[in-house]
Length: 97
Image (cartoon, rainbow, N blue to C red; front, top):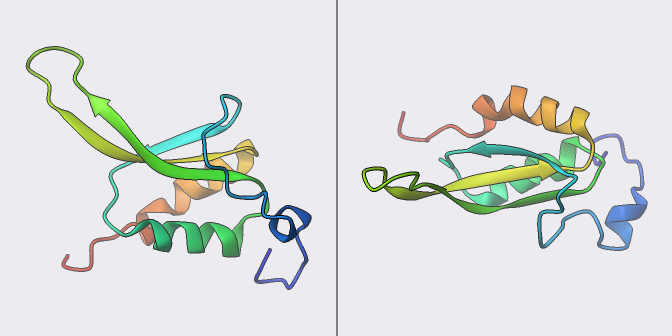
């Protein structure tokens, strides 16, 4: 973790953040109210494993349901996904609320 001044080999070699979401990662889907940088900065500082952050299409199940874009954060370590989902409400807050 960055907060504990521990060197993470995945970070040193640029392997922590994935460009695609592997199927074995645990996804957390949410509506993004802040920039991706806020989310990724929190992940870099507080978690250790590999992760993916990006956009995903949601909705559109039938003709009456619109298609919209959701954010997705996926984690290789399931415990980190649980921790992220528990803390998500505190880091994903709109500034105008």
